[in-house]
Image (cartoon, rainbow over all chains, first blue to last red; front, side, top):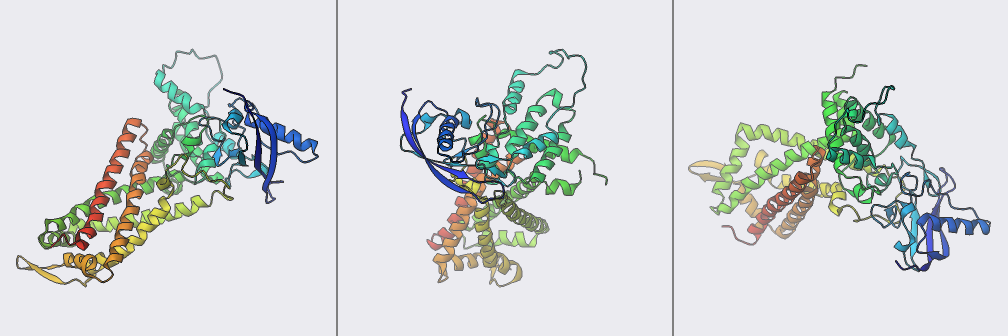
Length: 257
Length: 231
């Protein structure tokens, strides 16, 4: 692909802290290489701001190779920008052309409050995982790999669900700010495997209860989550979760106070 | 887990919407089928008999109670969900995601549902209330008196001075219903847990077909009267 350089106008959300109001600031960046990643472009901008004696823009990032789920920018009206199945860190500047104006906002959801600028607090996802997104295994000798036989297609489905990096793009895109794609991926990858069965019912009930407590909205199957997911998690996981949840709820005994 | 926990959870609430929604879908089929009797073009004899059966027989009357209960559940739960879901965002985006990833009608279920609700109220005042609580003329069929609901339809759609407004309201109401069904039917089955792509494609197709056929029939009813195709 041909290399080119571009000058861009950036409109970036600036917010001092969680309590401040925040507003858009406009920045000009020059000679941005088409081979840079979107975050590298932000690095250039931040260096420029530091040199000018201004405060750099705060944004989340960690691995910069599309697997950690930290980057979380809402670029030109789409979580992680215009490319399909791509995290912000893997979005390259060749997605844009010279003279473009790019609007960058943080994830917007009450359950993800803004910490500063483009950084949002996604600890709610950690609490959902803590509620049941794991399997309790006794420690001891390593179990032989062939103890549990698992069909390839089942393993693949489970793996595809396990690819969720918990970035929160599903919440950001959903009109209801629902976290159900995330939750259903985390439930599905265990529910599809034999190791996930002993706690399958308990897990679905506890994780949904925690999700509701965190203040995410309800799923209405619009499909926006699936369309923007950088890991292409399928919305069919939500249907599996619905089934698991209904089954677990109907099978459970009355709760005694 | 208690029932109250289940039905107040986010997943339980959408299951309630799906179950009540599918009951209403079944009702639409019965309603469209019975109303199709107007096209017998026998000056409403068959239609008035069918309407009489629905109002007089115990089975449809019991189902009618269920219908009102499910209507109320679907309307109240739907409105509550819409308000709750809208409150979860806080500050909105400067650049909206729009149609990139979801269909407009899947996002507009609350608005479409509200249009259908307004239409439903107009519709009940027009036909259901006079039919159940009096106000209809009578007609003799085979020597027995029947409520002439057919004459009421004919009056509202073909003779009334504001008939064009009435017919327009009915067409708009049914168009809203169409898009509501296109999303709602397949969404209900996803809520029931259909994960297989083969069946999702089939159910989506059935949803479209149902919406086209049933809503097509409903739209043609006032048009048939106002266009003078019926005697």
